[in-house]
Length: 311
Image (cartoon, rainbow, N blue to C red; front, side, top):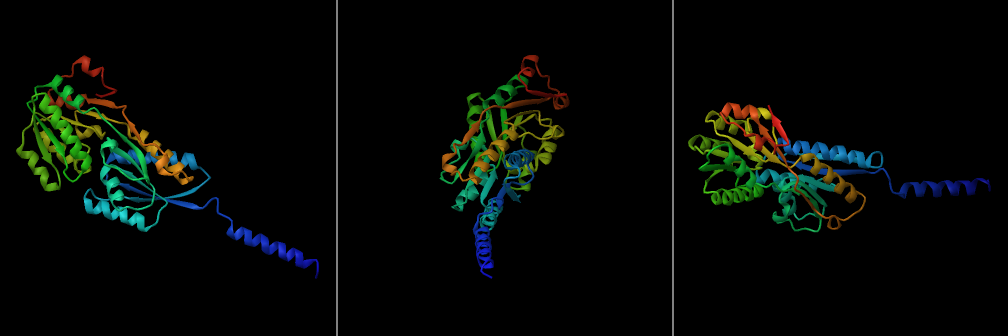
């Protein structure tokens, strides 16, 4: 009997320690907001998941709660509030509207953003936020257009409910006016606004990184191709969409960096200690299939600037 009591005491102590010891494999929950069905954000998210799995393989159980709101302020806000209510360990957002929606809720949950156009100008002020974005030399698009045809009026497809889209509009408007072009604003806030495209006749069209515009890109391109209006875009899409040229920052790089930042935060690092990053390397794609349909000839000296040519 006397021998059993010490053994019993040791067993009880062991069970107590086991019960209060931290679970090294405890599950972490990451909430993700990816607007609509935009291929650019989809590619970014795929790269994020792959890189995160590589970094935490076997060391951490990760559950990703994905929200895919329709591109409008109410849906973005609802998605942010749902993730906050779920009390996730980290929120990841793609694009400026989703990011600003989370920041507006003033949550203490750490936030990592990706896919922001010129994040230094996006008014992101919070010690719980870090991330990465991109900058594209938009004035180069006007230069390419001018080498292909005479452009007196440049149509700019944007969305006034998306902050980054409007900054791109303002940048292109100034650049166009400096080249003696008239900038024609084509504001897309609902599907009904697509009808405005049918009443306009610009010489060329630039499509901003608007989520709404890319949600309805096939409809937009159907109207523009019918009028044989050449287009340029800063978010890569499928070649069959009919965009003549695309100047963009590769999405996988941002997805991978967002995963690196997320992994650091999950390991205890504070977002304020992780320096945000802006990617400036770009890819230039010319679609010669579309050029032939439009009756446009690409000069050789322009083609050699492209990183990819669709033939």
